[in-house]
Length: 329
Image (cartoon, rainbow, N blue to C red; front, side):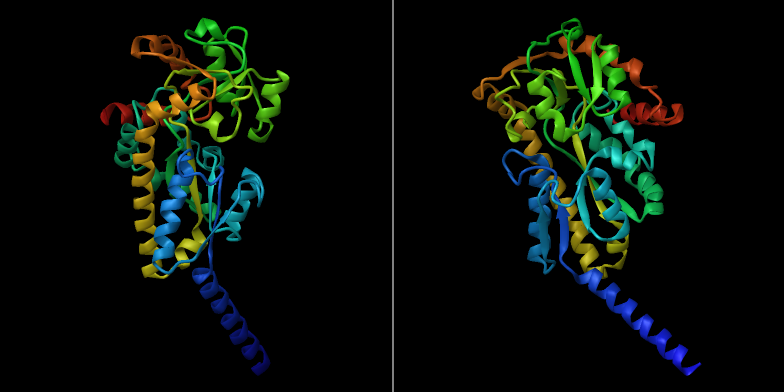
């Protein structure tokens, strides 16, 4: 019995040491873009976040995009506590709680400030994190990576939905394929790492994203057209290990929470500067930019509403987002 008790006490001691080590260890953050504070909205967020942690005694380490795996691997490492934080695809959350897909409904938000009001008033983080807790993960922030998304193509300028008839577009998922169908085009699901090759070989003719992405990822040799259609707020989710977060001391947890607020503010200020400058960067790189006014965007907006009930979310969830968006205008 004495041996068993000693073993038990030893196991408790080891577990306690591991917990203390986990709470005080270097905070590893997996990046999603090159570390460029001028061109990457998500890295502008990370840089502000890590700067605050480092200044307050919490050491951080940035892991280059792809160095510790793709989206599924990142989520697994977050869930098991092997990785403290990652800039992830919203789809990683959606596999656990489809409610989050509301942020990708086309034209649901007027702009980023409108999105933030909806997230706050709708208590979206509270709702989603209640579900993510089952996987020992949590979302700390949603980070816009630039102005609202436009239509990026290699061979065809787009001013109206009819201009997309002969284009095959890269899609994130089946819901985005339905969006392209609603616009009179077609889509095929392609992983992001395969997009450059797909564009150059003609497997796809374009994709939907914010204006700074072709410049950031060095695609302007083959991307030739951008239409400022203002479709969605392209964004990344800041995922964190709940095990890591819960084991932080009260002081360190407060530091992390304050860092999130500061990083959000830096990111939003960065986004506000990008509305026109990102378009000018494309033009400097030789990309034709089509600037649509509100009336010219309306045909895209009207056709897009047919995709709200694509099946990614329940009708009740769709209604939640529509009602929340209207109430926050």
